[in-house]
Length: 245
Image 1: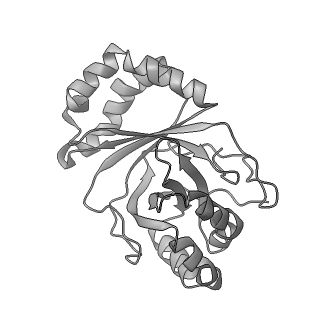
Image 2: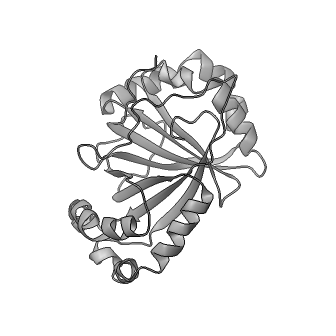
């Protein structure tokens, strides 16, 4: 039985791949790089195709804390499985440095994964679900106040548009304990991720949200003056072996 998923510390990783190589990376990843990472002390929470960027692969992995992250990554990237498959994986990648280091915004703010099971490598199961990822770039001086603003002013608008409960994540500000893999340091963000049953449900939510006066007003004033750059929204489809599905 799979151990309880680790998600006290999370990496949200986006890779820009060489044109046409996404399925090649997914094949290597799903066959060889899931359990081998988890055996080193981390959890591969999700692997996704970006529905709007055909050469982007997005994935999430979780750790117990920053020190165990250092140990787990050192064990994996210094181990035999990565040595065997790194050339095939790296050959698909143009860029791999778009990485956000995150933690849940509060108790119960992570992913609800109790009872979830990952499909086996020999029998992957495609999912119709669509995960929508909102990334709010924040002004450093107001970043700590944003989670309360989100709960008070934005979450009601999202729920009214049909969004289910989602995971709320904030920047983990600890120094990168594994500098061999760069992260987007010196940034503060708030990330909200919600699961929709299928693309039709996600599109209906997006249409309703665009028509929401409360949402339009929030976008117009930079989300209460907390944001220092435009919001980004990505729509992700889980691969056949994603735990989030």
